[in-house]
Image (cartoon, rainbow, N blue to C red; front, top):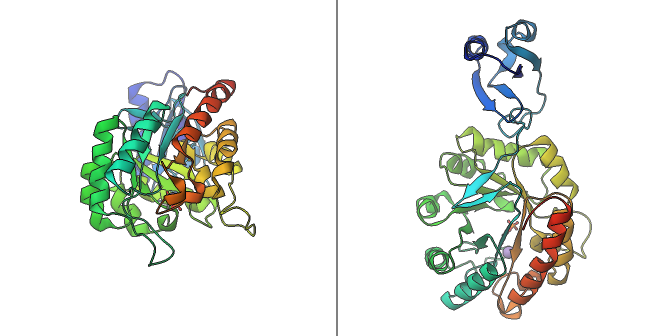
Length: 337
Ligand code: PEP
Ligand code: MN
């Protein structure tokens, strides 16, 4: 349930409404937005009386919220959330493009890619150090060394870094060294991991699960937020369908759905969605047209020799050309790049 305050309510009226809700057995989340102030009930709202609350002075109206996600719900927080990732904003007017290799392979590789994507206007550097691979015989990532190389690239290029956390064992290292913790598609419903990252205040890039509904995805965001971490960035990366031509099917309608239902920023990963480098630019453009707040793009200095996801990785030059096409498009949809 949410209580919407009238314009010009007094602090005493706010206190009175909060107390009335707390007396009904819920915790109250106060969201002071640009237009309205909203009091959201957290917990079991069964003890609240809608009519009584609606009659309190300073209260405009009371609304039931049927969705199971609350903190992630736009009804609880009407303004868009803007998440700061080491000095860069995700969710504001400016689009944020995160770029870099699927996995960190060597010092030379990550430094070269970091410098080139920064010059092309990337806002952050991605790179996997712990890789969730389908085959146990495939390259599993460089582990701690990979995180340290990313840290070096961050210092050299001056870009915040994004990397995937697969196990809570690595959380202290990630809290120390990484600007954004990525929770990959395969771990979207690893509830224990979600609870643990919910207790940090690091921004979390939460990828949509391979076969997850929008509601399941938002419930995973809710797990992180319920733990006290409001800094969640959602990432649509394609879902499993019957189609096999592409690696996954990019669900761009999910960007619109999620932005309607939630205040959290949404970025799109056309690389994992398509699995084909030649499709990335167009799908990135489509994502911007659909209203995404940013993109995450796999870039490799030598895709044919990449240890992971080479087929979907664009070269630094292709990335630069894509950014040049995205700039005027961003302006067309009222954004900046
Ligand atoms: C990745 O970003 O390299 C990755 C493994 O992504 P996803 O979890 O979306 O498959
Ligand atoms: Mn990848």
